Length: 196
Image (cartoon, rainbow, N blue to C red):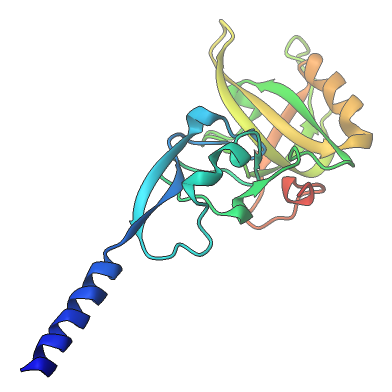
């Protein structure tokens, strides 16, 4: 009888401990690759288990201000591998923005992490002209819809080699850029992963 009672107590203790939960950090909003983590982006989830690679909620103050290495989605349980204390722009790169109208980009939406080829094309007011490849493979780091008055356009931030940033910015300002999405797995010339 004592043995049965001892076994029941041990089982109860194991069941109680296996139900212990701890608080870990989760995202409350989507965070783009290279974006800084804000306090409002973070929430807490109470989960069972050790969560060996998950970040405890008590480290919240240390996580605010760090940068996302890749695009992260709301509800994601954060791990240290997802974050970088440094801004996600490598020393040999620059982020250049451009606005792309529908005829200068693929029909399917561009997303952070996509790799695209960048082309120079005639300005909108030029009926005919030459096109050439400016950069063979660059990483998209941010995308946002914008209203241009002339239809749906998207603002796209591209991570380009530092040596090419001036030319890309100039062509962007002149409305002479177009992009083509490359196959998944294509290696970009520079990547946010190089920053960490």
